[in-house]
Length: 544
Image 1 (tube, rainbow, N blue to C red):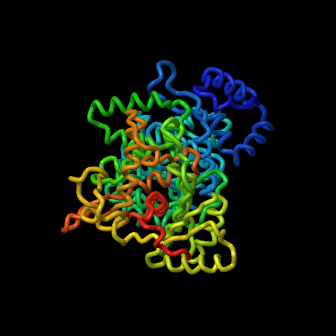
Image 2 (cartoon, rainbow, N blue to C red):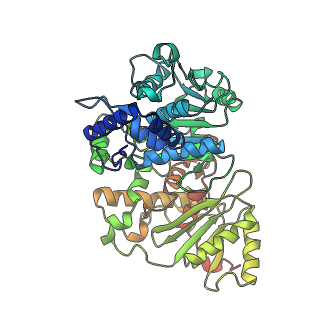
Image 3 (cartoon, one colour):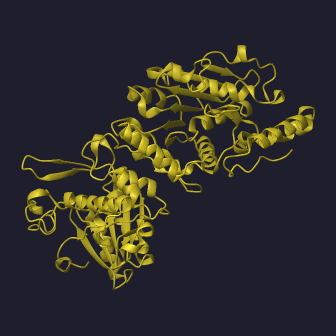
């Protein structure tokens, strides 16, 4: 057999791929020994099986709209995670932008299970019945799977399989190994009995998701949520925030939803020019909020009073490279900030910046007193000179452990550790919120506390960076911010930074709501906020 064409090349040469598949099908047609050998291989290699035999449908093509399904790199990683979740009996969530093929991948994976794994029970659900199964509608789920099955070689199908008999409405049955694929819709999702795994398509858009969660919780261990974003007032968003971002080879915590992000940049056919044209068109039609959710995966696209907007954060990615002529982005000492976990599902988080560039951001579970044992070695490795820690409440445990480490010589003499009190008065209380604008309110009159001021100061950095990148406006480099695109947790803290909203109390002072709609605490975002807002009069703070 010839191997599949390089799926990294884009667009693929579909004509050459069709010829390759035809040659392989001809070679296998009458060779039972070869059929047995490749069957054994495909049983544990779904990526290769999809690349060798599956098809997809593209209505935009002028010629044949049914084309070979050739996975690009990020799509292959998606299949890897599906395999991991199936093996570990864990759930996952796919946060996707438009047109990355996530539903097609899950359909192909479902057919692979149905063929090669006896007794597999695969469930599918969407918010409306016509989105699950509608004859002749290629956008529905079951027509996709039927199309994949119809294009497989006869020898690969179950003996005696009949599309009419074994693939009726909302159901596909394997008459040989008793594997099944069943569909459900709306509030009925999860009520059809136990499944090996259950795919929930566009799950951020369900009307009553709590009813579905209650039913599915008893009927499957492996729940696969696939959706574009739809604001933050839903179960999908809460599960996304509570989950753990997956990367290839990462050891994942047991019992936590594994999060896979499909960004538009992951698609080899999507360029910056494509993005700019689509965004311009959406803006001209008054649909920028829809574009923000479906392409940028912006949960805050239609939410009022967001402190830091997603488009500002995107503009800050690699800003130190884009705006390299603005000055020395790495001036000054390295500063770190530790957000301390307050128990339960909360996490410790550490951020390190050098000048205006964020150098490190990560989070981990565990007790507050243990956080220093992880944070201090990272700070030493990063050559940090100033480390701030959230001193309210459980921060005392971090302080105690840091004292012990200092006494034992585990902290370099040139590293200073300071408390950071979110509830304290704003920095420079008598100063104006807009420097040099003496008509603007004073900091102490506008901000409730230092937390509100710090979030707003970070907002200003992002906004100025956005204006500099998009419009070429000039600002001092120490008033900007850059997020290197190779930071491992970039997707996670991007989302956390857009979570916080602001409001005003009865006294007219601004306060921050970091956890709107019951969301989890944005720990990495908190640590970044702290790192970019040093308390005033640091010489009056005590070294531990």
